[in-house]
Length: 291
Image (cartoon, rainbow, N blue to C red; front, side, top):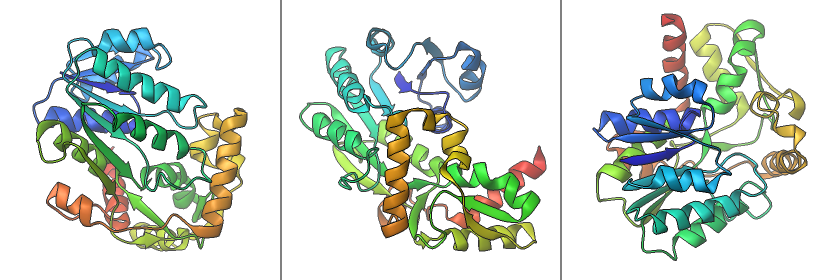
């Protein structure tokens, strides 16, 4: 049994689907019981209810499991303490394997959302757990899903960062597949892996791919932070910590981008070419047309 924390989020659901496809049993840890049907539909065997800040609930859910998947909440001030506590719970309850979804280039000290992930990695490396640390680059689905409607309706792809900032991206479905491999095979045990699709993309590059797929002109624009979907829709900017975190993201990405885009590691893990931006857009378009 594998405990998937944050199982009702986009990444958690993808991980649950990938694990179920490989025959693994999943105990889905969710805060909102109204989402139980969704996680069970994704292939979860059991559902455990609780808030990630409730360590007693996590410990109850971890009891009897052999593995734990943990991805930290976005811009939670106590993320480092939470992550370390989950690692300690895993050791205390006899968990064998721990898969941690961190972040690409956690050593970028200017970014608030990178610092806690580096701290959790450091804590994990001091244990006897069979750890796998995955460091995904920027998830494609964040800006593309939130910006899809405007791209279709207005011909504008709006991201929170400079249209000229070059960034590495990854498909969260590819990351989920890597998580499933980490739990169901031995080859990723005690390894740390940067996960990215090949290449770097600017928002202008992405707009060009959208234009080709949609058959209409699409231009790239920089959105105000309070109008940027992944931040505004989740109410993250109401938190001073998150607001400062996004401010630093904008300053850093506008100045330096989020460089990388070497797909060798992910291709080696998956045994196939990782999903690129154009392929992601084509898949998303097919999905929307079929619903």
